Image 1: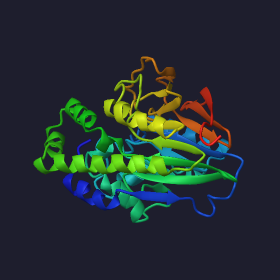
Image 2 (image 1 turned 90 degrees about the horizontal axis):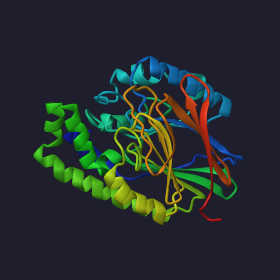
Image 3 (image 1 turned 90 degrees about the vertical axis):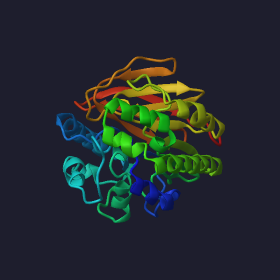
Length: 328
């Protein structure tokens, strides 16, 4: 949550990155398959179960990439791109052959405690062939079939939802984190970064001609989990999701698995890879939810996006399918 000054300064040169698919990515396929998990960055028995289960599902579904939906390193992120946690929390637990695929990653509130820029640097300095985070917010497009594509817009909700982030910091009762967050020079910097990102998000959504358009962020827009809705995302991001016909929003943060629907937009929460303190109470947008540890597997083709919720102990918990609404 707290943004260190050197990290905030460094991100100014990395505020806009657009990834386009490589030649290999662009080879047409009948469907595109991927897996997703959030809040996975604690070395414990639950993480170990999730690692084995998601690796098995990635293999059986032939997943071509993984979405890491934030809180990649508990409790305070990493200090540098050579931090020992890269080995202990990421590379060692997730060393299975089926997970040697690109990890498209975003920052969570815990990743902002020490040095969020280090997770970008890890990619920029090519420390690992899988980790993909070219900036704190970026976009990527894949070809699915001739004239059918998927674009995911990856955002940094911690920067956007400063009030939510500060509230979470206060709940942790860590004076050092609060002191860094409230440093006089930081408020103006956060405000500028948020303004820049909001503009980039709208410009990117407006410019998209993808068949399928998703947004991925750590904080959920709507949630029946322990933190609930994120007010600024509900009030400012959700209208743009509707305006630009975004098909789905994927998130973590609440230590739950959820499916919600609002204004014809699907909201998927996959934030329970390794933590035990989740809560779930359905809200008006809720369609399904559980406190079971797990992750999601996704398949998208020319007409249908299918999401399967899996338990870390093995087995499918739920399945949802939605039809494409863009450019039909």
